[in-house]
Amino acid sequence: MGHNILTEAELRSGTVRREGKRIFVAPDTYVTELAKEYISTHALELVQTNTIPASSNGGSFGKGVMSYTPIASTGADRFIDYYSGKGYREKPEHMTHLRGNLLVPKNDARILFRGKLDSLEALIMQTQITAEECGYPAIAEELDEVMRFVQTILACEVKDVPLPDIELFGMDSAALRYASHHLKEVFGIEHSVPHYSMGKVCAALNSLRAFVRETELAAAAAFTQGTQVSRPDIIEALNRLSSCVYILFCKKVSGKYERNE
Image (cartoon, rainbow, N blue to C red):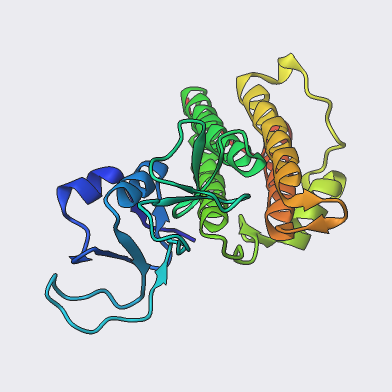
């Protein structure tokens, strides 16, 4: 699943469809934090719709989802504290956007989780470079699918919409779990204890698998309160993602990848 990205640069360049104070984007658009800040600062409305006006003077358009939460007071406040409901004229430095004009402290568990996803994307890229440099472009290409999956998780969390059904390398959630637990049957090897002698690619994949686990723990901290879990879909997705990376590791250990000289 892909998604569009709305950046501050696009807003400043005027390339985004606009009608007065309304900015129109597709429903699957991921809005960067800087773009959100630009929209808030300029008192714009973000409308997510399948029907984009043909021109800035266009008339009808589909029903949109605005990212702004109304403020009860009639003052100049443009931002709202998500927890207290307090209004702010300017965004405090210690706070950031949860969604739209709703603010939370920068150390909020959900913001920390988004930071983990950001770092995870960076580590995937580093692992791809290692795989390419060591002669395993097939691994780098498969990690592209992993990258898109992580980007989908981020987009769905930011927009507060459910994740699509899990599918990686043609396997659904149950198949990924099965493959990672039945290595002898699937890959012909036992569970391997990571060792430096396995080489740089295996070391990079193992580091990536471990960081996916860290990201899963960050998700649990962000979306679990007592016995209640607000985003079980995200936690399951990260659990299966760690299985997915472990599968790549086991494929490498079992010699399933040919090395390009």
